[in-house]
Length: 196
Image (cartoon, rainbow, N blue to C red; front, side, top):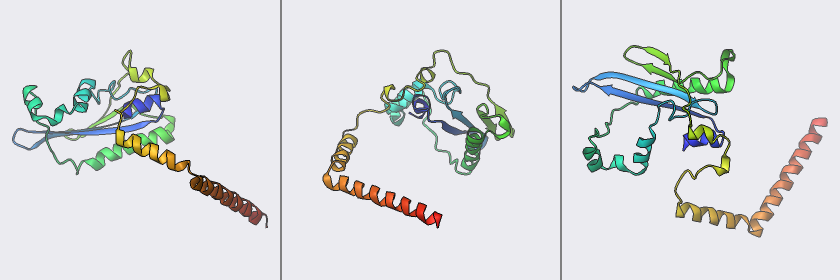
């Protein structure tokens, strides 16, 4: 969903991830983390290799919660490493991406996706490019014409309908009018007060 919103709704996404690689005897072989900005003109999460479309489809279908599927597919049961001590490093990397997006230090703007390897203490710029025919990039600015991001949710639809119905009542409309009058009067009083 975030991948699609970054392009169709023009909302930049700062994304990051962390992977821990254990030794067979439970020691840590390595930990790597990545941070990148997803926005038009930059590779999407699928193009930069952060997500795999086939894996996303399996996850949405709930297959990764099904131990029988995991065993029959020859996959490893998802591990449960505690990554809380490394999470601040990922957050710092993502904050750096956000600052680069909003302030462009040195006039350089957003860097390529970055990957840090804990075992070698190296930071790598990953020069990835948008793949030809990327559906996310082609949907740039599509807004409300984008494909539906989620399934219909009856409870959410009912809550929205109820909220809209309550917003149309005379009491709510009268309250909004009164609020607008109060805000306008307050603004006018502040302007007069400034002139004194």
